[in-house]
Structure formats: structure tokens, C-alpha cells
Image (cartoon, rainbow, N blue to C red; front, side, top):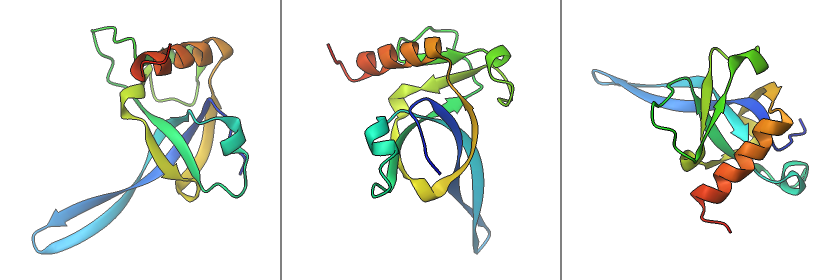
Length: 122
């Protein structure tokens, strides 16, 4: 699968659950936004993507490193969401579940601004 910056994807994340003396691993498919550059994203020899998680918990404080997504623009999201740029992580492309949607051009520009704020890029 080819990925592009701004893709909204699901990522299979393992969750360790301990029930008594038993340890179980469950996979949760959570939404993330691809933030890595397209040179990396489209390189078949690169096994990784940089992503930022989405949450439906909207903060009442308008943090500049958060990107608000209105559900009206993203039918496949479960509700209004926020991209949490301060929680950027690197994942293996093999952990990607499916493509949910793609950021609008305006939201992609807001994402760029939030990344600059978070990483203090002038």
C-alpha cells in the first residue's frame, strides 16, 4: 500500500492485558495521521511511517500543536477529532490497517503549522 502525507489510517497497536496469571495481547485499530514526508512514504525500501494519533477527546484549551478535525469533512471518523502532534511516533508500515480518509488541503496546512510549533521550527 502506498501512503501519503495527510492520510488518515488505522494502525494495529498491541495492548497487553493481564487477567489474573494470564497475559493476553489484543490488537486495537486506532486512527492516526501520516505526517512523514512523501519521499519516505512512497519508498518501498523504507519500512516506517511517522504518524500522530487522533482522539475524539477535544480539549477546551486551544493548544497550538493540536489540529481540530470537523467530522463534517471526514465521514469515516467517529466524531470531531484532534490530531495530537505532541504524541508523534514511528510505526512499521506492516501495522497499518486501512486508509480511512485524507486531510483536506486546509487541515494539511494547519498540520504543518502545528508541527512547526511542536518542534520549534522557524
